Length: 192
Image 1 (tube, rainbow, N blue to C red):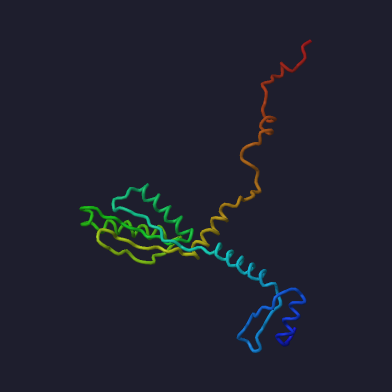
Image 2: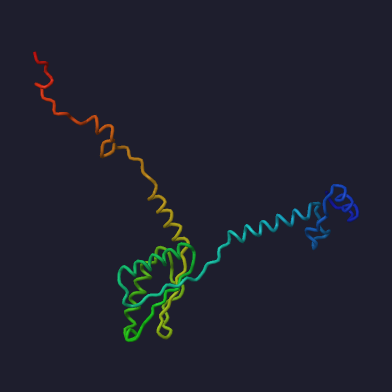
């Protein structure tokens, strides 16, 4: 509407049944808009709620290992770690040493090195293994670029491919018509 007196702007906003809202008070001259202020506040609060809903805070998850872990237990915990990292959470891996296991820390280090190699497709080491008392811990963070590449390859692999060739097994109605009956020439010939 251009530059006008504050009194004229107030009169104009009241005539239209709206409020005069100062948008940029530091500008010269100050910028004002004629709008329904309650509706503006409501929409602003709604946008903030939507932004909070979409915002996800990464949590720090923890998985504990022992140096003498069996293969199946290792695979289960590895899958859990992959799930955490794919979700966007950070993961702390803690190696717990009990009793005489403290004399063989290299066994725990081997398990953690194997874990690092297995988690390369989805995560990276944020903090390398540190021995604190009888616990050796390290932290993994998600590698978002690698996770996106992995999900794209999974999506391509799960899409059904339409083959040009025929199917290997006959369809049920074809199988019924291709059956042969034991009809000998004598059985079909009229007797007479």
